[in-house]
Image 1 (tube, rainbow, N blue to C red):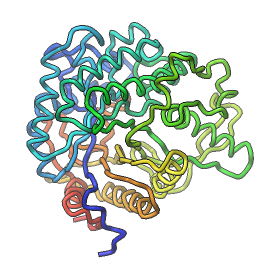
Image 2 (tube, one colour):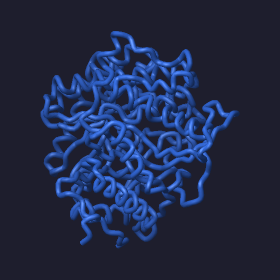
Image 3 (spheres, rainbow, N blue to C red):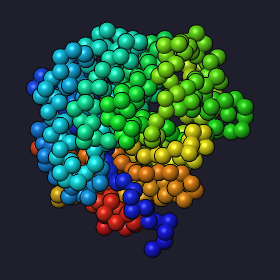
Image 4 (cartoon, rainbow, N blue to C red):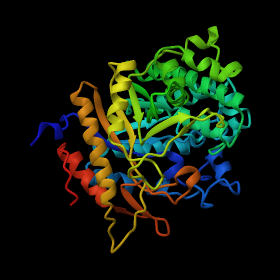
Length: 449
């Protein structure tokens, strides 16, 4: 067996999910309304008109789901906690039934030999806090820290791997600038405040985790980082690509990992560019114990005067997913190498990687060879980065099962397990069986069967 195809014995194999995308039970057992409850219930916001009211009904089917994870040989499971399920109003009185759900889930995972990786915020802010300004209100830093303290106090004796925020660049840009995600606002000034406060919130949460859960706990942040390259060597295209990377990556990675914002973005944002106050400085540059990388695609960028961003993507030849994202496996290699040079050496977990395809259930099977090919190629490039010195410690496929894909609704299938939304029956796809073999052996094979 070629050693390039063999992952270390201690490598962590898992899958990832998010609370709003799978749990359902949106108003049961004392749970408060989230911004995604409000957004998905607003006509015209979700492309197929669906909501996350039921989603995969994981809230009621969690025992069976853990049993399936065990059967597939998963070593770890990354899931998120719904803030409004714990604190219906965002602050104040704790919903004990909400806490019990996650305590039971963690206990079941541990009993199955599966390590829980807990994401503390995966986009479902309590609507009550959005009514008070949400991420654009500086108080959100304190609200988040208080919520994190509650969760860590109750789960910290059993959970040692924490992710503070998932993809802040996405929930800020989509929620506060483009309006395509909850809460659906389009205000550049609010977006930049939300950006700054998300960075501060990570620092505050990191300190809370360390103070409660102890120095042996591991706390990171999941950044979404695509590979971005200029369309040409023209200075305007090079700068356009740099700006896109600045918006999507450096405005979050630099303050969290270096304690400063990228100066090259100051003129771009003008008066909205964050200014660090004395009160802010204690929460920036706190760092991470591991870098959570969410990676899906690569983008080629050129200058565009008529675009508000002053840049635009150039469509490249090649294969695309059902999300119309370019399949470019080398992108994850270059992304890992670039991040390691900029911020390393630092431990990495691939906390999300996967693809949506138009899967069909035929005679009880989903033969998704395109997804097997995708996963194999991206994991081969991840292994290459490891051979070239990047400390990658684990991989979480996105996602465990088909789910509510945000503004796309139920129509986009990323799952390793197929969900029949009429019956909610789970059917492992061919990709799940392939990935299960990889998790059990640590050997990367291209075989479909």
